[in-house]
Image 1 (spheres, rainbow, N blue to C red):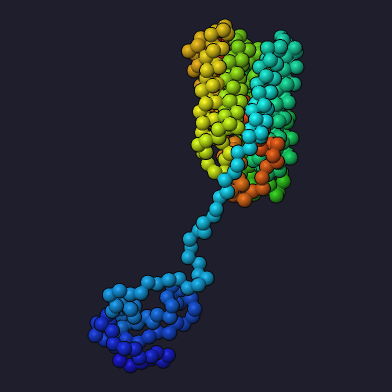
Image 2: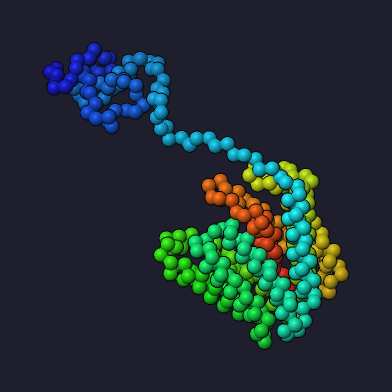
Amino acid sequence: AGAGPGTAWSRGLPGASGTIGYVLPPTSPGDRDPWADDEPIVRSRRGVVADAWDDDPDPPPRRPPAGADTGEQPLVEVPVVPVRRLLSLAVAGFAALLTIGLIFGAQTAGPGLARLPYAVVVFGVQLFLILAWAMAMRPPAVAVVAGVCILVAAGADLAAVLPPVATMAPLGYVAAGGFVLAMLAQLVRRADRIRVTESLGSTLVIVVGVVAFATLILLTRLRGGTQAITVCLAATGAALVIARVVDAVAPWPRLAPQVPRGALGVVVGAMAGTLVSAALGSFIYGFTPVNGAIVGVVSAGAAVLADLGAGYAEAGRELAGDPPTMWLARHMQGPLGGFALSAPVAYATSVLVLGS
């Protein structure tokens, strides 16, 4: 065999089918195998490519050169977030205050414009919800979204008080109009158009949560609505308070290293909320212990899962590299989300169980 320019003779190899091969020097650094440490590649005249070590039944293991990118993700040590007992008790106290304010405010709501004091109480809770969830989810143009959600909260409260017929239709119109207005406000700004799809979900969550609290005002106008508020929100409050108190005493087993919550608190909280609603069903007109327990397990279960989900969402944002949320908003987010989910449950209870 003749050697072409730039080639060199090599020793005969059994893997070359009895022919004499030659070594091809690399034409560029990119043509070489980054995993091979100067191992010659032999090409036979028949076009068969063979490794120079193929005649060895036990070739030496190949190891990547120093500094080579293996494509494997480095192991990241995730720190375990400690459970702060005083903080858990403080969150439990906040949930208890929400429970007392929303239940006793509904008991004092009068007919007509006399419901405005309760609407003011609900509007304050809605402001807390907007502050906590907007700062946690950080949608594009967060100031614009928060401003629109404040207008939606005020409009939903008035829509629950002023119409002569108490229906959910005005609240639905306010929610749809507020969502469209928030999206248009972000489309106007060029810097926010790129992230408009990302902001779709966060804006919708805040708007729906704000309008959900307004259903409590609407319930005070329905027959049996105040009783439904008492049973559902008592179950919600008991579940959130007991779950956080148990976390302060026995936060185990840990559900995740990044979430300072224990499974025992979640389970015991949901059971305590169900027990409270079943007990109230024995005394409140229109309820029985059975349907009270059914309503309670739905309300309490939704509340503790919303509270737990807020903790997981915050841990996910921190693992993704986002800056942490302000501590006050971070710890208010879970209880507020739990009560926002319980308000529609109370409305459904009033309609389905009490026939309002």
